[in-house]
Length: 279
Length: 320
Image 1 (tube, chains in turn purple, orange):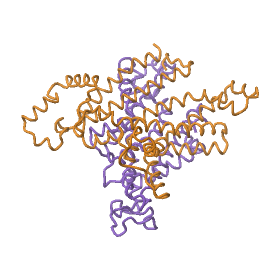
Image 2: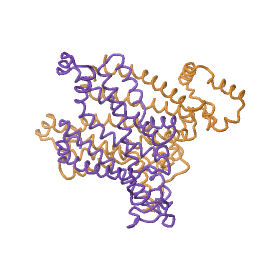
Image 3: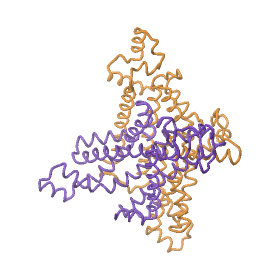
C-alpha cells in the first residue's frame, strides 16, 4: 500500500499509474474476449464504417470492429510484452546473481556472452532470431526476451557484486546460511528496487518492439489482432479511413508513455538521488 | 589495466563472439542449407546434384572447418553470394549502406538541432510552466515509436496538403542533391523524433547539474551576462552526456532504421535485412547482421574513446 501511495503521490506516477491501470484492464478484457463485438466477425455491409455508436472506432476493410480488434490487440501486446519481460527478468536475474556470486570463469563467460548479445541493435537481434525460428507470437516473445536478458543481467550483477561484499552477507555466511538462502533472501531481496524500475521500463520497450515486429509482418500473424499489424493494415487506407491509423497509433503511444512515466516515477521513489533530474 | 586498454582488448573478442553467434545461428535454421538457399526448387535436385552443391558451398565439411573457412573469407571481404541477387553480399551491402549512413547522420542533425536548444531552454526555466511543457513533449516524443511518427507524418501531409512523400526510385545524393534531400528529409525527421526527445531530456538533466556548479555561480556573481553563462560556461560541460547519447543512438540508427526505411520505401541496409529474411536469403542475412553489428561495436568504441577524451577526469580503470 505504501508503494501505491508513493506512486500516486508522484506527478509522473499518478499519470503513468492511471494509464497502466487502464491499459491492463483493456488488455484483460481483450484477452478474455470481453469486447463490444467479435474481433474476427466480418460485418461486410458495414465495411470501412466511420466511428459511430455501434462501432466506437469504426470498422476495417473487412467490416471488423476496430475497437474490438484494438482491445484484442492491446491484450495480445500485453501478453507478449509481459511474457517476454518475465522471461528476461528470470533469466537475467539468475545469470546476474550467479555471475556475481561465483565470479571468476562463470562471471567472465556470462558477461562476455551478454557483451556479444548487446553488440546488436535490439530490433536486429530480434529479426535474426525470427529469421531462425520463423515469425509468430511465441517467437516474438522469445526474441524480445533474449534481446532484453543482457540488460537485466547487467542490472542485477552490478548491485549484487557490491551487496555480496557487505557485512550482513558475511554475517549470514558465518552463521552457516546456505548459498541459496543468501542468494534469495539477502541478495535478491536487495535487488527488488532496481529490478522493479527495469521491469517497468522494459515493458515499454517490449511493447514497442512487439508493435514494430508485427508491423513488419514478423510478429503476431493475421487473422489474430495486434496493434502493429493494425497499423500496417492502415497504410493503404489512411486517407479514406483515418480511424484505422489514429486509434492504434494513439493506443501504442499512450501505453508506452504510461510505462515510461511509471518507470520514471519508480526510479525517483526508489532512488531519491535522481529526483527532479530525469523527468 | 586502464579502461581504454580493456575496451580495445575486448573489442576483437566481442567481434569474434558476434561472428560465432551469427554463423551458428543461421545454421540452426530447420532443414538443410541447400533447401534453405534454394527453397522449393531444392526439391527438383537429384541426390548427385545435391551432393555436388554441398561440396561447392563447402557444407559437406565439419561445422568448425566451415566456420573457419567462412571467417577467413570474412577477413578477405568475402561474405558469400546472395541467392536472390546473384551478387557478392558485400557489394550489395556497400551499395545500400550510404543511404542508411546518410539517414542516420541527417536524423542526428535533426535531433541535435531540436533537442539541444529545447533541453537548455527547459533547464534554464526549471520547474516553470515552459519547462513542464518541454518535459511533457519530450516524454511523449520518447514514447512514440518511429514507425508511428512516420505514418502520422504521411497521413498529415496527405490529409492536410494532399501530398505524399516521394517514394519509388531513390536518387543518390551525388546524382541530384536537392532531389535526394527532398526524399530524405521526412525519413530523417521521423527517425530523429524520438532521438530529439532523448537529447532534450539528457541535455536538460546535464544542464541542471552544471548550472548548480560553483564555477557557474562564480561567473554569475562576477556579473557575466546570463546568456554567456549558459552558452559559453555551462553548455560545453553539459555536452559530454549528450555526445555519449548521440554516439550510442547513432550506432542504433545505423542498424535500427528497418521500420523507417520500410515505411518510406528507402532501399537502405535495414530494408535489405528485412528483404533477406522474408526471401530466406541466409548468406545475405548473415552478412548484413555481421556488418551492422561491426558498425555498432565500432561506433560504441569510438564513443567511449571520445568520452574519455572529452572529460580528462574520467578514469574508469577501477571497475568502471
